[in-house]
Length: 277
Image (tube, rainbow, N blue to C red; front, top):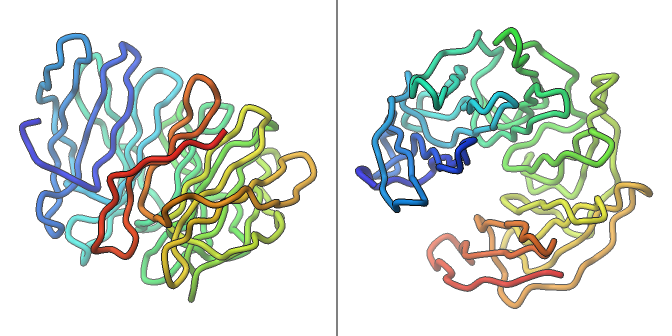
């Protein structure tokens, strides 16, 4: 790439190329630059820059193939309430309508109707609020508040189209979960995990259940648990060989989940990977 970066986003475009945008090179100043990777040639190409420099932002692919990037921070002291959309055809970014609140460490997920839910995060404190991006109009609307304010949580689309939010950080790490009903815009509790955790991963299994892995609660966690999307109950799912947080989880074509890298304590980074299923 032309810029070293971390805390960036990466999204697959309709032609199979990969958009990387924003991030930081030094942990303090954000980047506005973006680049596209062509897997057929192995070449990176600079593309249009975002309107705002940002890291700790999120990204969602829209149904028309564009990419929505939202929120984040420019330098930790300035949090953003803006969002913008990348058009891979023109390679240009367009600012959306304004959002209601600044936030980082939030979660973002594309709903079944093509709209995008942004929920929780950190503003001046942890947030309960949520808002929905209308992909047809380009504007945001406030929706129902979560039961519990949280940051560094996960959000997953269930088979019925509702959204499961898990864990995160309030005054301490959280063991709670809740479900957003996309029809009523209301939240209901979704049981309690055996371990509180933040900075974990959540992955949809082939049967529609949700696998939650690792995370942080005072120390890194090696435990995993599964949410049954039909009964609403949690069960433990074994332990990893290495406790980790800030890791990634990817769904393989076989339906198995590969969990990779992360850190054990913020200073020791992991090069290992493990497979579930």
